[in-house]
Picture 1: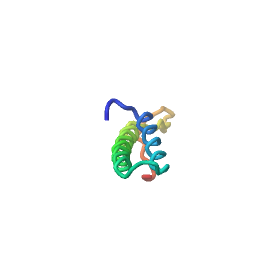
Picture 2 (picture 1 turned 30 degrees about the horizontal axis):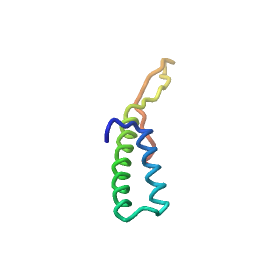
Picture 3 (picture 1 turned 180 degrees about the vertical axis):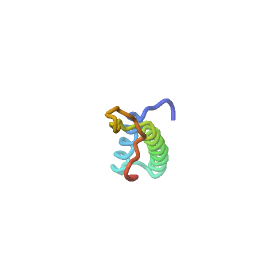
Picture 4 (picture 1 turned 90 degrees about the vertical axis):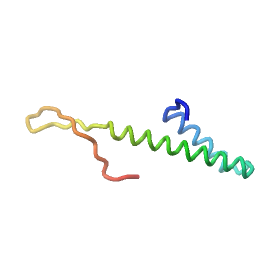
Amino acid sequence: MGKENFEEAMQKLEEIVRALEAGDLSLEESLKKFEEGVKLSQFCLRKLDEAEKKIELLVKGESGKLLTRPFEPEGNI
């Protein structure tokens, strides 16, 4: 992976999925695309995990003052 961002990686991943679904690739080309897709998928999951760790909720404390606390998702996808 170069200096791709999440959006670029997702776009490439979508292109790979379309190419694989079309069924016009040779077995060797399909395997190469599949491997690239797995790497892109892992990259995207890492980026999402990093983003999730940065998210904080803004909540109002008992005194009415705004406080932040870490975001805790209800479950994993």
